[in-house]
Image (cartoon, rainbow, N blue to C red; front, side, top):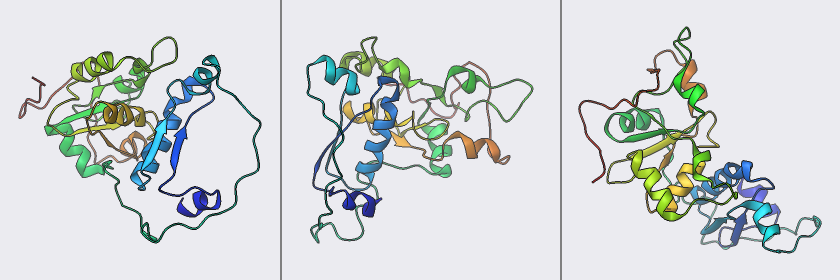
Length: 223
């Protein structure tokens, strides 16, 4: 990734704005944001509402130009960028711990979260709370107000001192939860591998149903 970005004249100290052509693709921009901030980029932002919002606001557009020439990066950044950039990347052990003692958010559609009764490897990670990120976007294609976003996170016990994590089917849509969490000052760890490998590993637990389950050993309700 480092070499690819450098070849396009982009360095870790540059100001970056990420956007998508359709608001339905917003999580693609937030996934890029999560990767870039993890890799140590100091100023990466996401355009609220994407290209449609930009056009509505009268912003100029132009045809694609040739890629800029490569640039050298200051030695301060070195060959090895910060490994986490302040955004926690979760492994299976982390997910198991957060699901039991913290708050784990499942960003997949309700049907995937609930699972199929005759297929025991469908459903969700035990104790995960359904949290579809499409609910964070208002009808006009912009993110909902900070007050609404905070209430949404609070209703899912996703703001507080406990660890919070998120996953989806492939690590893209859940990045929107990570991004909005950062806006609210709440770190949300991203389980990049997400549900696909979890479902295939028969040694990992799976839960089905619509009821929000919590570990009896801990109470992480926000106060």
